[in-house]
Structure formats: C-alpha cells, structure tokens
Image (cartoon, rainbow, N blue to C red; front, side, top):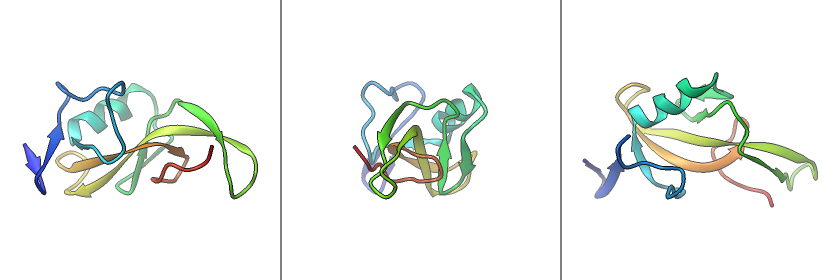
Amino acid sequence: MDYNGKKVLTQGDFSYDNAYIGAYVDANVVMDCMDALPPAMMQLSCAQMGEPYTSRKDPNTGEYRSTYFTFKCIQGNFSKGIWEFCGDCFVGENVQRGK
C-alpha cells in the first residue's frame, strides 16, 4: 500500500534496524509497539514505546533525558491510520532532537 506516493510499511517489512525518520507505517505496526509495554505516551500526535531507547542531552535544558521510539498519526485513527516514524524522541515530543 502507498500513501501520497510513498510505501507504507507493514508488520511484515518494518524493523527498527532499517527504520528511518519519515517512514510511513500502518496502524498494526504502532499497535504492536504500544502493546509490548505500557506506552510512555499514546496520542495521535505522539505514540511512544514504554521502554527508553537511549538518552540524549536536551539542548533546551542542558540535561540528559531518555528518548523513546515515536510515531505520529498522519491520516485516520489509532486502529486504521497511517503513521509516520519520528525516530527516538523525548517523552511527549514527535521530533528527534538533542545530542
């Protein structure tokens, strides 16, 4: 399946090893991630896995903070939407930032 001319990855072809920021995924990929552990955040604008991926220095605070694999819904809803992989972001955010 495509969305806006871009392939939408499914459970069969999505992997964190080859994921890239901006990749489109179907709702089943996101639901699998959210079901693995209680999510850190679960909203259409920011769905984040419950286990931290790493930590980075937040340029706004100068403090190191945990980051989480993050998705945002770009079309539809939780169970039938198209989602975009945002990388590993600070909790509550859907843009990867910091070093």
